[in-house]
Image: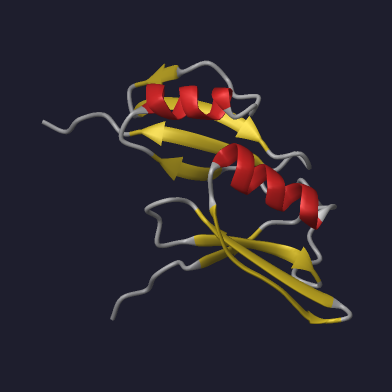
Length: 123
């Protein structure tokens, strides 16, 4: 049996600001934005090429905005990823090299932290 991670809830303080950040600056695809009820709004976004999405909104999670740390994306070219994020106005770290890969780091407007990794070629 396969167990596939499909959705990760991200706590945010301003749904519209978070949606704009993730779609316009980071480049995620907007899949859903539905007001389910007066107490619930569900927004789902997916990184290009990913099978896993993020969600946020109103009534989605009780976690404190900005409390998610260590989310990680994997890309084929860290330099291209860095340039893309920088050009879109994301405050992104310089490329950092480790034996297990090359990384850049950024945070969303609430402080939820992301790592972007290029995995080294396996030989």
